Structure formats: C-alpha cells, structure tokens
Image (cartoon, rainbow, N blue to C red):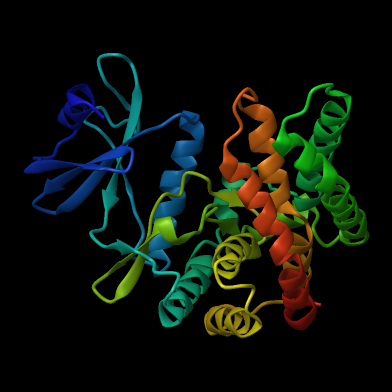
Length: 327
C-alpha cells in the first residue's frame, strides 16, 4: 500500500501515532489501540450487516472480536484519491495461531465454540433477509465445474506433464465428488436453507490460523468479510482440515479438537453428518482444478503437481480419520 492509502486515515476522527505495513493492509497505532486499513471489494449492504453482526457478537459476550469504524461522514467505506474503497477496523496486537502446538489448537477450538454461540443471531438474519448457504447446492455447482474441466482436458490435443498427471487421477476424485453429493441428497430436508435461516447461525467463513491472533493469553478473531449463514461446523471443518493435513490426519488430534470445541458448544447428530460429508467431498481436489483452469495455462506452477501428489498420499489417512471419528 502507498501514501495515498495512508491518507484514507484522515477521513476518520482519530489521531494516528504511527503507521506500519501489514499483510495487504496498513496498521495505524492510536492512543486507544491499533486500527487496520484494508481495501474492500464487496457490496456496501453486506458491510452494513457485518457491522451489526460484530456488534451483536460483542454484546453477546464475545469481546475479542474486531469492530468496523465509521468515518467522519458516518460511512463504513472510505475512498482514496483514485476512488479505491477501503474499510477501517479495530485490530489486536498478537501472533497467529501455532498449528504445531496441540494445546493452542485446543484453545482455538474452544474459542470457536464460544464464537459460534455468540454468532447465533436469528434477529439479524431475519431483519436483513440474509441468504442462507446450502452445502448441497455448493457441491452440485462444484461438480458441474469438475465435469467441464474434465471434458476440456480430454479434448485438449497437446497436454503438459501436469495435465496428463491430473487427467490420470481425475476420475478417482470426480467419482468421489459425485458420490458425496448424491448421498447428501438423502439429508436435504435437514440442511434446508429456510431451516438454516430460522436458526440464525452465522459462520466466520474463513476460520483458519491466519485469522486467529494470540495475545494476552487469549485468542482474538479477525477478518469476518466472508461471514455467512450456514451450519457452524463449516468453520470447524475448515480449521480441522488445515490442521489435520499438516498432521497426517491424526485420529487422536482430531478427537482432542472435537472435545475442546464441545466444551463450549455440543455437536448434534446433524452437525456430525454435515462434518462427515464436508470431509467426504474432495474439496482440495476441486480447488487444485479450479486454480488450474481459471489461471493462465501457459505456465503451470510445479506446486500444483506437488499438492495433487500430497492429496493422493493422504487419502488413506483421511479415510481412516473419517471412519474412526465421524462415521
């Protein structure tokens, strides 16, 4: 970010003592604490709901959560001289969650359980007519995309080494994706969008170690821009998947995280069913394919091949985890 971005702070009734560069953002120190300035590309209406949600979460007892700041004109979005939109939020000094520390990960899971209780806001969901997220619809959409890319690969005359390797293993994961989506249809009534909206359970949407800051013995949670109405296990799944991929899908570690989460929020049979099918669907494979297809294909990073190889190596460990912990 440049000096023009830093000038956006002038739109707020705050005195900036110093400015530091962060990851794709600027940090401004004030007498009341740190603020963060970030570009914002979403709709203004979604930001209004985010503000209400974060305020409600804090009022509901979860205080270690960021808050949006309004500028001098009372707006949530400010612009630099090039009309680039920015938002300003409160920020917590601290380090990211350490995925190699089991106790710290357990603490993060307990934090998530407390956060989910505070994010149950049926009033906000109703008053702002927030659309609910449907896991079945997401997987059907993903499967259409996978089918499209498979056809593209098969019809391509000259294939790179990566494309040959990808196509060789494609059907294994594609059939897995189709099977997960088909089995999930049996439980559509339990995962109905209207039912999700009535419950009013909001999710963080991107609950991973980057967005967990450890400071003064506790975790603070940041970056709620991907919030959504969905079953809360969406966040638990993402946190667990990232953690287990780095720890050979350890059954004992997974059970420890579940136990820690349930000290704050109990998992229902529906929650466990959702978790099972989230893990059953080959989301990581879809991400590799999606990245490949939607980026320049003239040069394909070797990291893509490495990710696919690791995915194949870990498949047996993942199945073992699912059978011993979720089924």
